Amino acid sequence: MSKTISMTARARKSAKANQWVEENVEARPPPVGRRKRLTIDMDADAHRELKMHCAKNDRQISEFVRELIDREVSASRE
Image 1 (cartoon, rainbow, N blue to C red):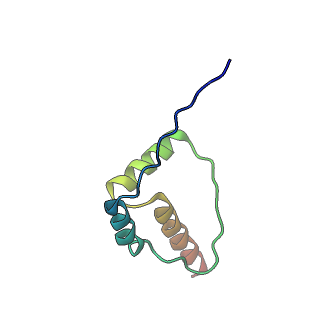
Image 2: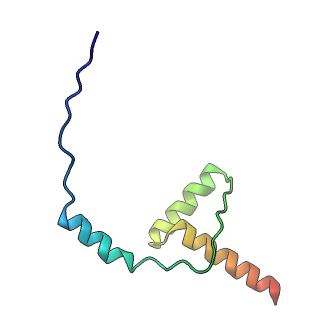
Image 3: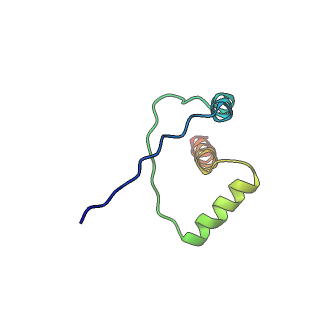
């Protein structure tokens, strides 16, 4: 038994996609110093609410969480 797979040409990069990438590169904040990854487990309902909150406020979850951590850590230093 043999299988035949038809190969198609790869999709070409569109100018529109390239333009979108170029325009949004500057919208991302530049990395500040050395970064470390943080992974947490959380309740599925809490995650859904967090995701909805960030979407409604046009923010990324990572940005939102970083700001919360920065605020709490700064407050504990005072």
